[in-house]
Length: 183
Image (cartoon, rainbow, N blue to C red):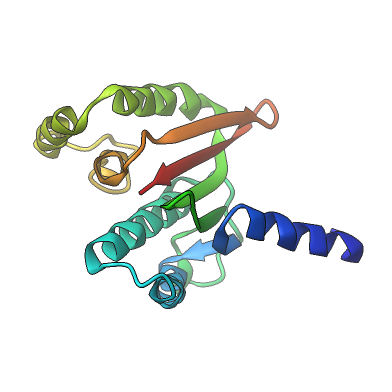
């Protein structure tokens, strides 16, 4: 980015209600620091504890998705930082709602399966999501899953609007996956 465009970038950030953004290497240790920064930023809004926890949990869930599923990995620095991924996360407040926006590269062969999973969640109401969550907890996680495979379901249960997502094909090997959750 050229120096003279940085002001335009700042104006775009401000106009879109963004108050926290990071792009780069994510580790578990970084998520803790990101959580501290988020807590400080949310204190400005004087939100109740329940809403603060929802925003915080969405940031943690999306950050962990970057660590676990980003196709872009940085060179392993040490065994201490074995789990890391590269991506971008943005948190903001606009139109009386908080939003968490996240993106990272994924392998093209994973796009269809992820699209199907998220499209299914988009079609469910709160009661259906609750029942689906209970059913999925009893199922053995997918072999490719780094957790229990419940993250997107939990996310869909917490939001006030339907989760939005998109895939942008970068080349024959990778696509850029982005997801937005609004509370």
